[in-house]
Image (cartoon, rainbow, N blue to C red; front, side, top):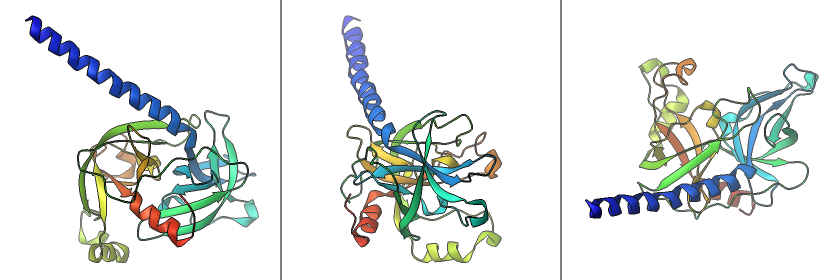
Length: 253
């Protein structure tokens, strides 16, 4: 009995450092997490959050998903692409321009105006192992109450070809058919992300180095039901493809 109690206490003590370690990592990561969206000075609301992003390089570059970017901006309304910086209701708006896009890998690189922000370090351009612990931080339900980053954690469940499941033949668009012919390998996670998490940094829980970028969630029913009935199947773009994009545009990580 005494031996059992000692073993149990040892197990609990070993678990505490891991929890503290993640908390320390999240505290550092949050400073580099930003919102991506549209700013309309004459609009109500003025700011619309479309997804998440994170700062890299010299502190003036931001990474997100290509599908997070707005399709059109209305010059008559003075609309501009924006990066939302800070936390709570005191977030500030930074004007941003697109400097690089990878349609194939659903990645976008933005350059922001103003002073440099704390930047995240990218992991090496190689695949992590299945079973490795990861976390990701972003804005899963937008900014209804303000800019409050949320962290989810889990493991890399699989390294699998990027294929978007469809319910019937009518959903087989040209874009989907092309991806079926030329899939690339992505991470499938056991952690649940939501649409607002698109563009979130996925990082090593110990080092905080970015190992991937959250890009999609498999939705079982409708987009409206994703909050109440999440599938739990989340995909992330490996950081090796971000390294490729940065190299193409001669930008250091």
